[in-house]
Image 1 (cartoon, helix red, strand yellow):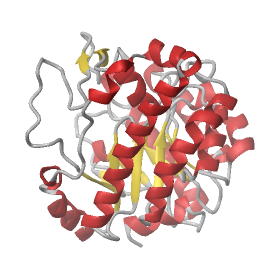
Image 2: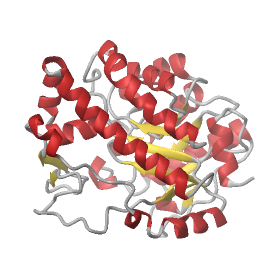
Image 3: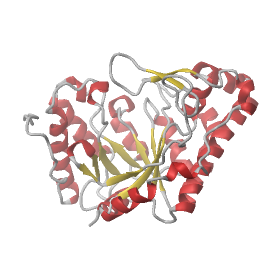
Image 4: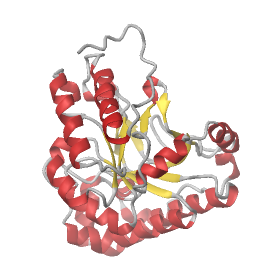
Length: 344
């Protein structure tokens, strides 16, 4: 069975022969990522500026960084603000070649949107400003959100027009929680964000694609909103913060989970028993015999403080055993560097 078929079976609860896996660090991934580039004529006006006009800074610890200068800190500038144009042909230079390569490998093909709605709002307007203005200046926030939605719906439709029927999924990020709760009430989320997410996700489904969303923090309630809006896969990397049992009771079988051992409480701990406990709990409470779970990497050991080179190989083996136990086949053999100690 091809990688594409394995992932599709897992997402849609049609009993895959093994767990789908996204572990590029070990040369094992059932998912291939199709790129869309920034516009060829984009030239940053200052160091760290992206094409949305946000200026990023970085700490001494290698990581993705954080936006510190916001192009729409004064929302009155929205009418003059120029958002990215995804009808620009230069963005798709090389996309066709990527499709051909990944299709030849029979991968499940995913295209990504970084910061799809809420995160894009607060990187443009500022985090505190955005939360305050959701309450005090709702018309301005509606105008900002609708402009962002328009941009991303255009991207989805452009990909469908240029490469019809070839893309299998859209993946995106929108972090929604602190360690203890979501940033906004569920009522506000449903009232303001739900219809806008649904417009984006409906465009993705209309193009024949599954919808994957990553969200950090304690987003227990938000997952319900994602399900109602049409999300097929939710990427959650802090399962202990969420409560593995609680999330399983609420959502097991209703949405597919993409996850791994907890990136805060387990992988950096140096305690491999915690990794085993996470694998056991996730496969018991989030996976089903028919599917519903995708094993995935975080991708940045330094950012989350993983110093034991044997932790991730140990985690891989733990999930591989569960793959064989639940579905019949182990995970593919990983390409682990010879100098990485696997340990027990």
